[in-house]
Image (tube, rainbow, N blue to C red; front, side, top):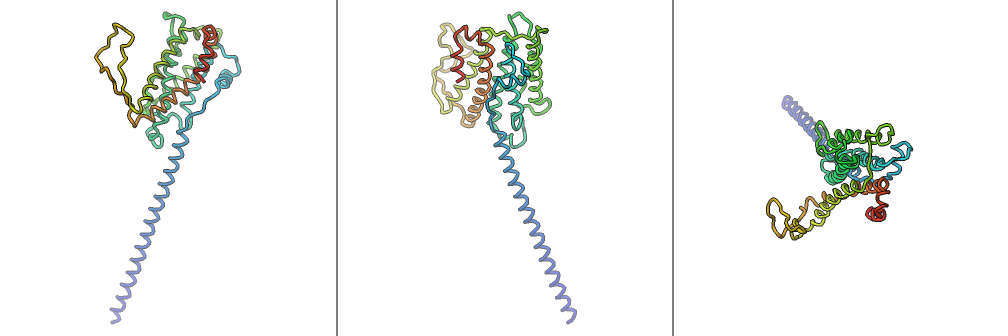
Length: 303
């Protein structure tokens, strides 16, 4: 009997120890789950706040203030206003909160396609402007030599916009910015005649033609958000105009629903960059615009 009683007491003690260990383990598991939920929730909130902050579009900047700072108070010569503005537009795009985001592969920026579309809109205008610098603004005639710094900037800024491995997109764009800064210093160097900017009406017309085509494309894509039936006018106005293959006389044009916001933000980035460029163009091409009685027209476009 004493042995049975002792065995019963031991069994009860082991049972109590087992229950206590189970409860302790259960508490630990609940604590880990609670901590994991708390940390996960905190991480989601942090990523959301970062995404909101990094997704803000940059404000407009004063090109006169930027020029005064970059040129260290010196009066800008012809072409420097536009060059300074081009450099600063790139600088803002690359170094805004969150940096350049179109090639990011980590959250939260991997989910933020709107700001990536905004960057692409800015980059499109930058590329057109740099190409015009290289082919037109910096050359007096078609047979003249191209500027070496601009011949470096153009391909660097034409690099793919979504490459994150070496070389990264922003790394290539930074090299393009450095080349533009070299050209900017050449413009103000009276002892070096290789860096020139020719404010001519034909040069300005070339750039405006590029802008017109890009804005026309954006306008079509924006207005097609609800779908439209259009008459094909590809060959209109030319009696003997031809095209590679035949196309329908009636076209149904519609921007996919999932792309509408991207087109909107691309247009916002495009116009953000373009507004700064037009303000700089007004200063560098003022004499040409005044001669053509177009100063007021340009200001109305900016407005």
